[in-house]
Length: 217
Image (spheres, rainbow, N blue to C red):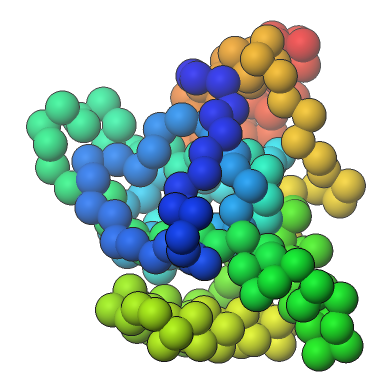
């Protein structure tokens, strides 16, 4: 695996970037960037890595990740990507925390937004009706531009800030301390996880987890 790459996908002239993805697989590199990211999986399945969280993903999943939180969606069809079939489809929205100005988050009106941004540092996944509603809001944003798009993004963030239908992903206190040397070792761990993740029962999965330290650390 490559090192945890730093990315800056938003042009300097834009407040946010929203786009549809249709690829053989999602970005296969363990990476992080300074932007917040909302990500909707429309098609595909595999294993999702966010910080120190490892979970399967499927169509309909929506996550919100904060700045510099490493992440990776590893497709089940990774070995077949050379066939150039769009196994993976989704919608991704990037924006900077200060897209409304450097001082906005310090205002009283932004308290809920500050709170949800803090939660995003661990990664959030949305569930139940919230995920369904959020999907529609994100799909609508794809077709908007200009100030209309800004208003839609604010609507999305306001909705997220009020819902209780979510799970936090990375462990409490998780911070990104990755270095070049560490990411090669982490890839060995992740490859091991992928190999053993689909064992038939919980006992087998627990046995695989308990072998990490002995094998890699």
